[in-house]
Length: 109
Image (cartoon, rainbow, N blue to C red; front, side):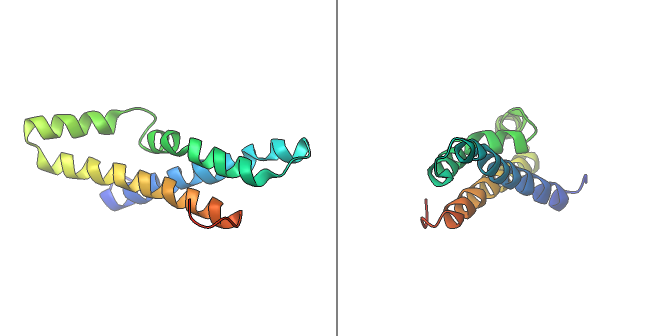
């Protein structure tokens, strides 16, 4: 799991899983209370996007710190690597939101 492509896929799938799992499981409360889960699923997916990105990157802002240190110390390789990690986590979270919107039948967010 230490290779760069493996880490990118891991981060992507983690962010995707957080958004999908959180929205699907979180909407169970509306089923229990007799409401429709569609609006709750969409709201939860949008609200969890940033948290999914942070959790997929390791639960802290270490990637953002590495971006800053790479930028100011001139280490382009570290800068590029962590940039792609952040992009991968955002892509996973966005795909999760897109899938929730598709599942609920409301089109694009």
